[in-house]
Length: 264
Image 1 (cartoon, rainbow, N blue to C red):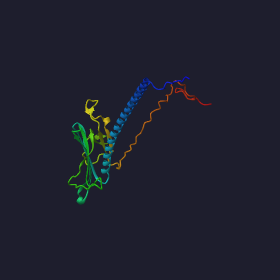
Image 2: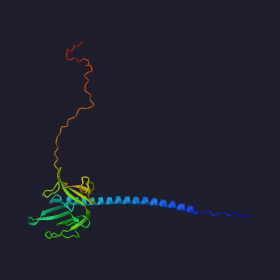
Image 3: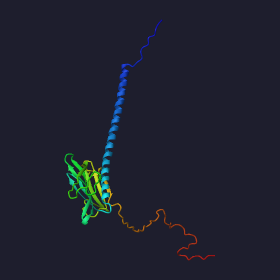
Image 4: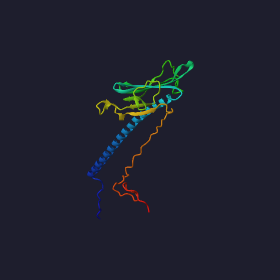
């Protein structure tokens, strides 16, 4: 009786090598796509984080201006701009005061925003100072002595390359404000982008890389509106065609050189 011997079924060495090569190619392609997606996500996240920091700082400055320029206090806003080691730098001073005993003028709250050049990072550091009678933390902080000037400059952000303040008075834009009266609005510019060569050949931070915010001062004030009556001239209808001089005269309309006919 003959017995049939079956050959074992399996993969040959060549087939195994082909499968391994195809698997490696697929894995390399997947890893390449993953790296591209990850790099894009990191770039987008970094850009969002950068813009979020700008928005948070500008929002904090806006809150300081809204609080100190409130009605009922004698508030002042002063600022000046300068170039610090090639960077746009500014100092913004917000101060509100009141008259206490013996009609003595006292500082209720004083906030200073300013930048200072940092040689280690070749950029600027943005600082904020808060002092006065009104402390921010009512539990931890103690009322500082006004004569000692105990306020400290607290670093808010590093790597700042552009910080500028301007006052908007209608159509006029002023680069400094030292008057006792409050400006109508304050325009703050902030950027962390390093300067580069611009289209005009100069070196600086491009305007599209600067975050600007216009902050209205004393938004509760009454604005005087002046309504001017203006007469608008209605233009002629361009679709209306002029009368055709060659068209025959309307019936019962006498010619200019003939008398009108008598009716029957």
